[in-house]
Image (tube, rainbow, N blue to C red):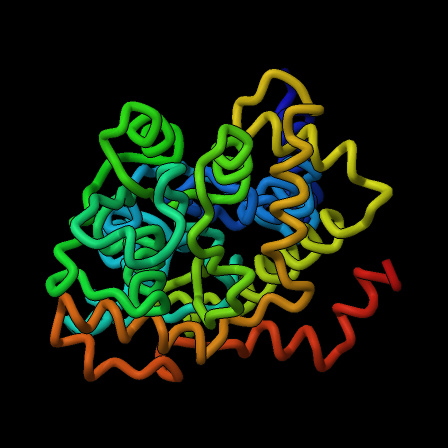
Length: 337
């Protein structure tokens, strides 16, 4: 091949790379690993943002990872194995008390979803004395909710000889109630509905009791917030759009299908109660609440005295949400729906 021809080919190849480079750069997305500790409907905005490619719209390659157990998710966040945790503040508080620099930037669920469901013959608080109550893992939301419920009912674990047991997730706790292995259990909305239909008693619905409680948050390490602020804000934008899509009644069927897939339900119709639970739990402006976080810290400090030094205000950084509010982002994405 003549020398001049080879030169032309090389120049053409280099030009192709130069012109291709901007296009390639534009398609590069920031990778984020998000660990979710419980498969519950308050994760719907995350599932929607993933399913409807809203994360992609903001240049994000998001991997949602399910990890059973809030304490494990918190440890993964502290170790840098994930960028963001969808987790209970109770699981984060002890790490923060130990010196980990973690902040909560969005409140996925700002109320306790739990009801204290009891055997049919247990109708009042006094009937729980000397009885067994089932929760999930100690230190998690169901456990903290149980402690809140007992105090609200003027009961004391030690004085009233009440035993808390780690008995798995809702299905396991329901089975333990039916086998009479438990006298009561902390159950979420759908499980509560099922058990009440079978004649079991509702001693206290924490959501209806309006007890301030920060159930689940999105949290990140402070170095992520500082060094990758633009990526974090774009992630927040995408999640808020996921909220808007969920709240738009025109999308009900689509949202139910997404919930059904993520909860591994047989069909979208089976997700109706979970859809209603999501609407009940989610806030249109999902700011983490200081008062609800204080409630969590109060009960975690009873188990870990170091948590007494942790301030709720210092755990929360709502700057990304405030930026969106200042530019009227909420109004744009909700559009009156």
